[in-house]
Image (cartoon, rainbow, N blue to C red; front, top):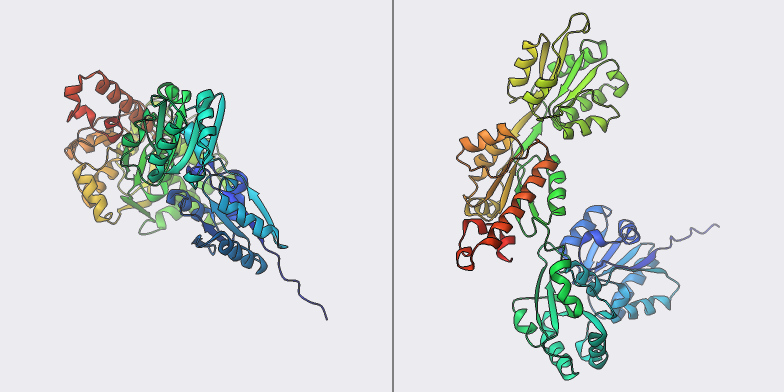
Length: 526
C-alpha cells in the first residue's frame, strides 16, 4: 500500500521595513504572495497591509499576531505541518525584535522549514526619509523596552556621531532623562519623526532638553534622531519636501484610468483620493461597431483615429470577440490624439503614424492631418470610434479636409454613483487641496454627483475645453499644462505648489496666517 505524502509547508519571518510599501524587498514580496496565512504585527501600517492584501492569494488568511512569542510560534508551526506557507510579517527587520528572535528559536527546534527575510530597520529607514544622515559612530535600533537601553553607550555614540532609535511616543520622556543622565549635552540637536515613511510623515527638530515638548501630539511609534546629522536635515530632507507633500488631491476619473494619475501624484508626495465620476459601458446597440470592424478587415478605411484610451480598448475588445488581432490592421494608418492614447495602441503591438507634436487635442490633430488627396489616398474614409457624448469638432474638421468620416459610438460614458457622504462633504468644505480634471465630462459629472469644489481648492485642468467647462460651472482654473496629458497635468500642479510655497516664504509672518496663498496643508507646515 502506497502512502500519500503530506505536503510540507514553510515558515517565513518577513521584515516589512519602516512602513512605505515601496521598501518591501522583492524576496519579502514573493514570500507574501506565496503565503496561505499571514500573521502581522500591529506595528505594520494599514497602508502597507492593503498593498500586501491586494497582491496576495484570494484565499490567503490575514490575522493579527496575538499572545507571547511561544503562542505565535505554535500557530506558525501548526500551519506548516498542515502543508501551508505561513508568514509572520513584522515592522522593520525581524531580528530587530527580541520577541521575533524567540519565535525563530522556537521554530528552529522543530523540523519545520523556515527562512528570515531582512527588512529595512525602522530607525535607519525613517532617519533617511527624514533627511538625517548617521555619520561617524552610528547606532540605530528598533527599541521594544526602553528600560533595557545602555544610555552610556548611546551617549558615546552621540558624542562621536549620530543616534537613531525607534521607540513608542510614550517613552520619549524616559529616553530624554536617560540621555541627560548619561551626560549628553542638552543643546544637542534632536529630530522626532512620526508616521515614518508614510503619507503624513512629519519631523520636528529641537534639542535633547526640549524634544519631548516639541513632540506633543505624536502617537504610536516614532523615530528619534540625535547628533550632528540632525543639523543637515534642512539640506537633505527629501520625503517631506516633495512639491505636493501632504496635499489631498481629488482624482475624478473612470476607475480604470485613475490609477496612473494617482501613482504620479504619490511620486510627488500627494495623497490622492480616487472618485469615479464616469462609468464606461458598451454602446446600446452593437451594430455600428460590428460594421466598423468588418470595414477594417475589408480595407474600407485609410485611417483610424483614436481620441481616448477607452476607444482603443473598445475596438480591441470587439476584435477579440471575432478572434482578430493586430495583423488585421494591416494597411490601415492610425492617428492618436495624445501620448496616453498612443501608449494604449502600442500596448497591442502597433506604432501610430500620427500623434500631434503640438497641442494634444482635436484642434492639434487637425492641424497636422493632411487633406484628402484622391491620387495619394485611393481610400478616402476615416473611422472615428468615440464616446457617445464626444464633440463634433474632429469629425467636422476631417470632413472639411475632404475625408469621409464614419463617426461610430464605440462606448458610452454614464455618470457614476455619488461618492460617500464624507467625500462629498470634503469636496464642498475645502477638505481637498486640489482637484484634477481630465475632461469636460469629469467636471460635469463631479459637480452632478458631489457638488462644486470649495473656492480654496486648487483646480487643475488638462486642456482648454476642460477649462471652458470648469469656468462655465463657476470654477476658478488655477493650473493648465502646455500639453494635454496626465504627466504634464501632474507636473504643472507640482510646479504650481512650488510657486505657492515660494510666495508664502516671501510673505511677512503676520500676513501668512489666513492668507489665500497658504491654501494646501503642505504649506501650513513650512
